[in-house]
Amino acid sequence: MIANLEYYKVFYFVAKCGGISAAAEELNISQPAVSQQIKQLEKTLEVSLFRRTSRGMVLTGEGELLFRFVSRGYEQMELGEQRLKQVLRLDAGEVRIGASDMTLRFFLLPYLEKYHELYPGIKVSVTNGPTPETLNYLENDVIDFGIVSTFDNSETKEGAAVSSYGKDFSYRNVREIEDIFVAGRRFTSYKNHMIDLKELEKMPLIFLEGDTSTGKYIKNFLSENGVTIHPEFELATSDMIVQFALRNLGVGCVVRDFAREYIESGVLFELRFQRMIPRRHMCIVTDENRPMSIAARKLLELMIDTA
Image (cartoon, rainbow, N blue to C red):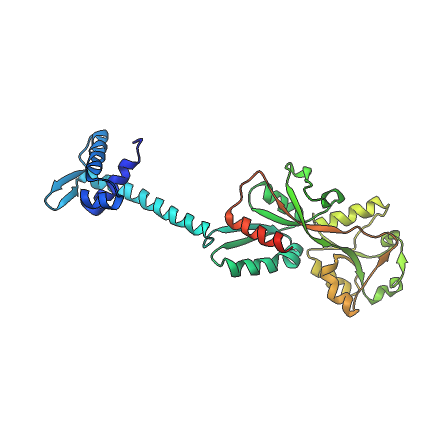
């Protein structure tokens, strides 16, 4: 392999331009310098690459063989350079985000809309999953950053780390969220009363299924207060929990945003407890040890500046 790749660049332009003078003009170097580098390349490869004719420089058979490979490589480098310039201008690129249904719907979507207006050439991919899944995606470099909801009181502090995932991540709180229990007319005896958390043990409860931040947070909170629950229903989405509560199938545990319109219209009501459920946060979580693309940084700046 030739140590000086400049020889191949000169070879490429001489072959493409068909002569020493035209190549020298294209490269903005002297004709003797072009001739010298071609001679040096031929000497190193121990083969003649050009035939000197009255019409200029014509590739030999060996020269044509080499040119097929060199031209492919050089043109790919030019394409790479053009692509890089597009990325730097934010005309191209990709942002990979991890988000749950809740963080996507109640935080991320408006920013994605604005970002697409500003940078329509950037591809944005969103990997949907609960908080624990999103953290795993971040650790495995599947996403550039995640929008998660905290599931432990210690994690509501900015900069806190989730050590159980084997990595220290950087957190930035962007929005407060509130977990509530909602019910319909079947449970009106509880309406407008301050009740003890232990009352939940008697109720048919509706929770999210699987490993979610909301489920973990509420179950941990109840356990710390001596409350043991056995949900009647465990459903895939918070929207379904609200629908079950609307049909009086139980008392649903959701983040307030999902039930807000039904509470305001009076179709559902919020249970009031003698001990308040502490609020938590939606957070932007990043891995500070991993470099981030310009496109991803721009989206982060947009969210942080306006959150």
